[in-house]
Image (cartoon, rainbow over all chains, first blue to last red; front, side):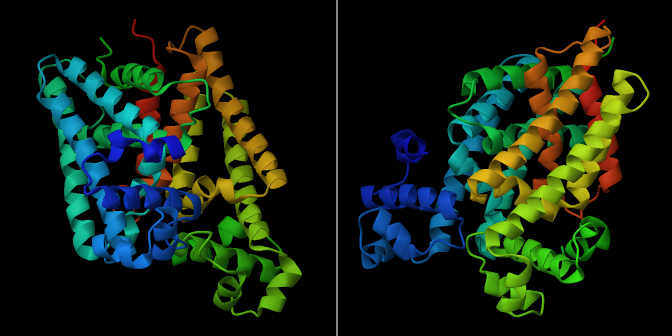
Length: 204
Length: 204
């Protein structure tokens, strides 16, 4: 978990440095004890900063959760939109989307869990903004599936329900993934892309 | 959530009455604020009891979590084992297992979330016991998939990975299911059974 949270790659967009340290500390604290049991004092302490120094960057604990959630959701949307917009058959694009989305949820499973499980703790405005990002991610997957159905390449029971199942399968990787387990993020991505393509293929 | 937690059906096995009321109060409190932010005093208060009265039934907050987790996991295992042991083709049995498991995670999504997300808060001995129940649930699904592969009815990339994906898909229903949404637990169960059968079918 430390390795994940400390990874510069995950939080590189958060500046300045002190704000990034606070985000990393918040991810660790929320993951360990849950959002509600964590105080801004805990977070500041983990980051080696005073509560007053935290307050310069984040007025509330909720702002930290929002920052974490926003970065996570924007990252997810960017990779799904890229897969949607790339060249290739619907099957190739769906496989690319699943591989990328699964890899992210495996590599950043600690962040993924917070982002997914603490949605209800966001303030109303932040919640609406995050839900809009989630809808766009859903739209990206739905549009690839729809393209496959239109092209006669996919056969699915219903497009919205299949979209929901594909996203859910990928997201839940954050819950069960264990870096000490026998599968790497890449291997899970490849397995899941295969399983999802089986789900949507024509029975011919 | 109140409707779910108060349902006699879910906690009918927990006796006496006072212990059941405490379990229901704990489910509500853990769901609202997380395990770590909840105190036994909160739980007793919700159940309309004193902390001393709670202590008669549960010595610690962890004992309440264990009780909730045990009932949830035993229920899950019972329905998966029933599907495994029933008459029928592997496809029929796999569909029955998915339908039952999904329905449970939709109907009892609040309990399902606690059971799934707070595993790490169990004491070492209780954790081992719950993990053993989870392994048995996994074995039940794996054995149905294996039967289908052996019979030449199913074709899967690999049995353990497919088992993991099927369980994960069903469990994640607890995260996203919304009783005010457009799908009933039964409808999700039917959709998911269809999607899982597509995942394992022969390409012929």
